[in-house]
Length: 180
Image 1: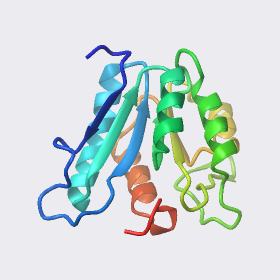
Image 2: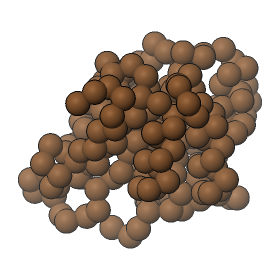
Image 3: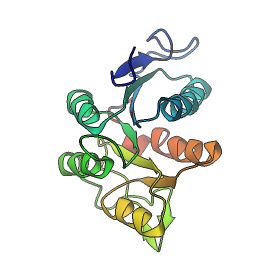
């Protein structure tokens, strides 16, 4: 499969891990031009899903145009994106998602605070967006969070920090797409 083609998968076989109940899989979209970064993020996601006994459907895109098409079709619960991608930028993708799945008005605080601005999670049933970007200045973080990102990480990022943000998004029942 080429790096430009989207990849879709679910915890290896598409079935929930052994011992799990038949719940809808967590749908996650990972957007980054670097295949190694996508693979690293997917491994973090798979480890979390396995720990929770949940099925996981991961779509991958190397550009923003493909990412937007995938999100429009599948409405992922979580999108993890780089800002600097070909086609539609990661921030444009974030703005489009926020326009169609607005942030909750009285939401709990998200996992990231930058420059005094708390990140706001999406309304229940919405899509959380986590930015993992080479654009890592305070001003970049500020604008990413201001536009509706749930969390913002600069590259290089620590696996544990990203895993913590993923746990907060995927484990929060208030953000569930449908009752489990």
